[in-house]
Length: 142
Image (cartoon, rainbow, N blue to C red):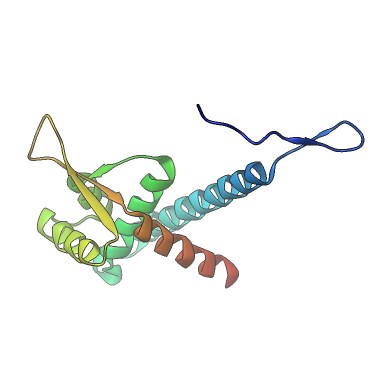
C-alpha cells in the first residue's frame, strides 16, 4: 500500500498543496513550455525548408533530437523510419546519427515484438536532461 502525504490546511481552511504536489506542478509546466518550444522550432525549420534548399541546412542530428525530445515529452516512441522521415535522411544516415547518440547514452532502442525488423527509439533520461538544459539555455538567451 502506498501512502500519500496529506495536503495541509491553512488558517482559513483552504487546502494548500503539499511540497511534492507543487514540485510536480512545476515540472509539468516546465514540460509544457519545452513542448511548445520544440513545436515552435520544428515549425520554423519546416517553414525555412519551403524557401531554401535542404542542403543549406544539413543538420539531421538536431532534427532527430528535436523529434525524439518531442516524443519523450509526449510519452511516445519513434521508429528509425519515422526519425529518418522527419529529418529527411536516408536510413543509413539516420542510423549513423543514432549510433552517435547511443554511444553518448542519449537513446534507448527496443525491437518490436511482432516485427523484429522494426526498432523503436526513445531518449534516455540522460538524453532528455541534455535536451532540457539546452532548451533552457535557449530560452534564457532570448
